[in-house]
Length: 310
Length: 140
Ligand SMILES: [Zn+2]
Image 1 (tube, rainbow over the protein chains, first blue to last red):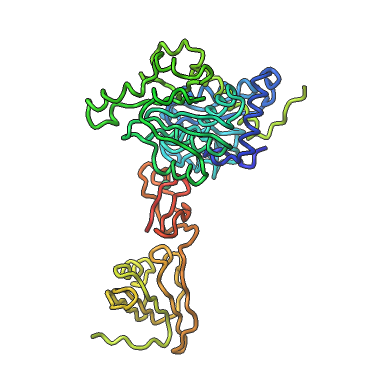
Image 2: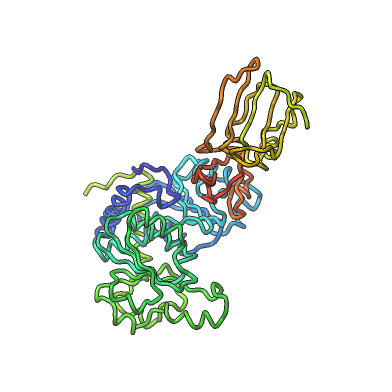
């Protein structure tokens, strides 16, 4: 059982809990059949006040593969909120018949609010631009799977580092592990915000900022790509001038280590050329699978489920 | 020059940063008192240049959280029978409920009208607080 009853922010998990969660996910990956009935008789309610098919499918699949059942909605217009029910009341009622609530909502702080009123644990599946802890857990499990652990890794994050919540969260979470080094690759306009760098400074974590992906790709063990959106630039010329620097191509991949992995939160637009997909180092489509496994581990932990007997 | 008599019974809130006196007056609800209340603004001060000062001619329970939120550098003196009985130096409260509201328009507390939101002190120097739900920073 985890110390925290609910998972609202990545920081709700202690380092030990994080390690235990990843270890459980590893065991599930090795032998999924063994876990096929651990949540039998349990119900997960997924309340999606804004649509996110990818995230909802991942949670539903995770619960079904543990032998549990799911209910919920993916379109708020069909739910009782349309009749004006408050979040607090929805939490109170759903908490009566579900064993676990997964919530996604466009307003920041909603999952926390639900956790205050629900009689069961709550998982935040995204509250506006605020937190999305299971995305971060997915990224961590992916890195762990390919790299064995986090110690000694050089992690490059590339693209829009200024507005990317996923990237801030992954960076500060990875920084909790020993001996991780960062390279922040972005146009100056989209550089990593001060609050993230201050957190790294406070922990004594080493990082370097650069505008050249080509110049540093050879040092990386992990390359985390993100979208560079047109609307973030002042002018079209600026966008066209800069965007290609932050697009991953086979030419750039040729400069990378043979065991570097390329990650991306998806959906991808044009920041990774499709020709890179065939490269075995491109693991972004496999991340989806790790997302399901880490959610299986999380559901088990929050429900306090025991490891099944062999 | 207005004559502010020496206080026999009551409270003096001194060393208020100039301009904050009226804010404190309102937030403490002093306008609702029937007793004598004196608000002095822009009083000369050797230490502060200009300061505000409030005298309340009755002993009441001050909301120290409110004071600590607006101006933690004030000095509060309780006076009984013409004698200063207690001086208090404030510090901003670690958490406050019911005084602040979240200014983030994307915060759920503004959609659901939640009144008991807790705010945690994140920077005592600038009196900055964070909303417990969305983490957005705010101050009074
Ligand atoms: Zn808020």
